[in-house]
Amino acid sequence: MDEATALLRLLRSYSPSGSEATAVREFVRIAREVGYTTRIDGAGNGRARRGRGRPHLIFLGHIDTVPGRRPVRSSGGRVQGRGAVDAKGPLAAALIAGARFSGPGTLEIIAAVGEETDSRGARHLLRRRGGDAVIAGEPSRWDGITVGYKGDLRVTAHFRGRRTHYSSPRPTAADVALRWVENVRASPPFVPGPSPFRSLSFKVVEVHSGGEDDAWTTVTLDIRIPPGRSTRDVLRGLPREPGRPTLETLVGIEPLEVERTNPVVRALEGGIRSEGGRPTLWRKSGTSDLNLVAPAWGIAGAAYGPGDPHLDHTARESVSLRELGRSVRVLESAFRELAEELATPRRSVADDG
Image (cartoon, rainbow, N blue to C red):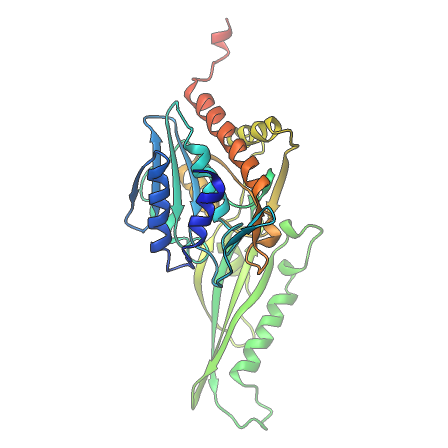
């Protein structure tokens, strides 16, 4: 089986967050056909392994997508469909590259659920000790490596007030909520800096109002947090006026920026160079499961995968077959180099005599 066939099979199982079971079963079938041992864990993640013992390398992809069906087809040298870029393309590339893995150690490819919402699949993995290194399957183009992601704080502000006649000068709960949003936007931490990656930013996700005598309004913000700040500090710094809202945290994921010299980055760079490419390091304003697992497990990591990140979540989502094939060879090289490096004890100064 080649990477294009694997990707088309994954794409035909539509899998928005919360409805991944059919796609996970297809992932497991593909993995078995190319030589992995497989299982589905308690969170519904698909898991495929080759080899045994340490080092334990993990490729953490995700099988869920944002909602929105798109036609699945291969034409003009490209594979199209919801998830072709984010992130079934990286997952298919890793499955095919890993099918050739012969050690040392263990390679595990994980198709996690829920990455686009609450990362429940990745959070389930944190219950046990992780591997020795992790590559997150996210689009970076075949010659790019992602070394930084913003954190994500999703918070709902609850406002309450007495209903008044709309001709009254007294503000409604919705008026107060909208003024609060503008206060957030104007507060010093949210003033844009010279770099989008280093700036604190937010979008209004939802606004709801209701009630009879006791009127209410809720506003949900999605706040993206740069490295050097924490979700806790940002939450504490949100304005409390007007309206003194009750704040409810829905999602809290810390920002992450890895060392560009860590062994995962070096192995991916080596794989890109072996294909004649010049590695590019990305720092993204989005968030990934890498933010959760790499710090929790205390291991080296980075994100990699075929596809143009500007196409994910769009109606034009597609990946070129040429890029898909090159990423397979990059990953095959990176898996081998990383396993060999982590299996070799580092020499101390004393070892050099």
